[in-house]
Structure formats: structure tokens, C-alpha cells
Image 1 (spheres, rainbow, N blue to C red):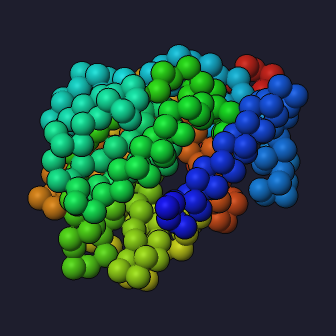
Image 2: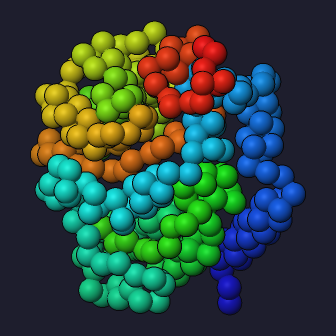
Length: 313
């Protein structure tokens, strides 16, 4: 007898598959440019400026439409980026990997430790965390991975640098983050925005004991800036991390010769630093930055190489 929760899960997967097929069909009729213009207008109720992009969101969208740099594809690939990271800062910052698979059927659960993480290299949001193999729902995890492998993230988000990534499953070591074990609120992720290879903005993510999320935005000196990015600030001040200078140095080395990118890092319970990912179009160019004036202040930090006719800021 099929369990009710299994039936509901299959129904959700069917609806997701139908939605994905619609997005593929939509790409035949709606160009990336028109898609981005429509999406931005619907989100912010104002026009996207891709003629002379000035704000950070404007420039991210301009990149997604016009900048086809193959380096973005290589570094957005969560497997391929490991070689780049190893050469730039050393393999010690990479989360250890148990295996790489093309299909979930290749994974032998018996050979994996009690705790591990499965994720795809070609998308976002597909990570599956196992903290106890005895209660792990392998059937559901396998179905999720098969669905993720079958998708091309380009059709879901129109981020062209994801289009040519060959999908794989990565099995990584489970790392207990500092934020989960801390007795006080601590960042679970440091998202470091680098402009012209310089670490300028630190976006620190938090989740409290009740599951409420916060985001604080700091400058490179850990001074809290008067803006928000999608979530409110933490109710109390957050102490400057002891590893902050190392984080900024690592981010700048990874961002070398890149006009703008975001480097995501995190700390474990031993205060050891780990690389998470590199991002070239944060929030799909739809960052909710308030006040909106800060969208333009951040945009000024990005010295984008634009044709002369587009430089009107």
C-alpha cells in the first residue's frame, strides 16, 4: 500500500515536472532579454535599465543577457570550481568529497558514513542533508535527485552560465556549522561581494532558534551598513568574526580578474573556514535591497566594462 505522504510527494513531483516543461516551452517564444525585463517589472513595479545599467540589479541582469563568459559556467559548476579553488587558495578549504555520480542508482548507501550531504553541481537548492542514515528516506532523496538531474537550471532562471553544465551528484562530508552549535546568534554563511577583485560587502546570514531568518550587511571593516537585503537585521549587534581578514583575503584571491562576483564561505564548530560556492547573478538579479538608493550605491562599486554608448550613470 502506498503511503499518503508518498502519494503527495509523487503529485508534487508531477506538478514540478509540468511546470518545468512549461518553462522550456516558454523559452522558445520569450527571449532572455524580454524575460528579464518582465520579471524585474513584476517584482519591483519599475523598469529594468539595461540600456545604461547603473544599479547592482541592473548590472546583474545586463550580465545575464549579454555576458557569455565561459568562466562563469566553469565556476558556477560546483564540481568544476573545486579545481579552481584548489589552485587559488588550496584544497584545505574544500569540503571533502566521498563520491561523484551521474545517477542516484550508482550510490551505495552502505558505503557512506552516517552523516553526509548530497547535492547537484548544476543548480541551486537541490542539497539533501542526511544526519542519521537509520532514518534517512532514501527513496524520496533518490526521486529528488533524479528530478534535479533532469532539469537545466537555465530554463528555470534564465541564467545562461548554468546552461552548459553537465549534471552530476556530489556526495560531501557533513560539516557541523558554527551557527548550529553557538549559544548566541552566529552567521551561518558569509556572502562576500567582490568588486574589481576587492572584497567590499559582507552579507551575513543568520537563523535563530525559532527559525527566523536575518541578514546583516557589513563593509569590509565589519561596520553594519544602513540597508537590508530581503530580511531584517539581527536584533542585537554581532561580534566581529576572528576569521574575517582571512575570509576577505580568500574572497579576493578567488575573485581575481573578475569585475563582480559573490564568494560564499562558512565556519564549522572548530572555527575552521570552508568554501561554499561562487555566484555571478545573486538572487537572479532580483535582490530586494532597501532603501533602493543602496542598489545604486552598490552598482557604482561595479566597474562594468560597458560599450561607451551605455555608460550614462
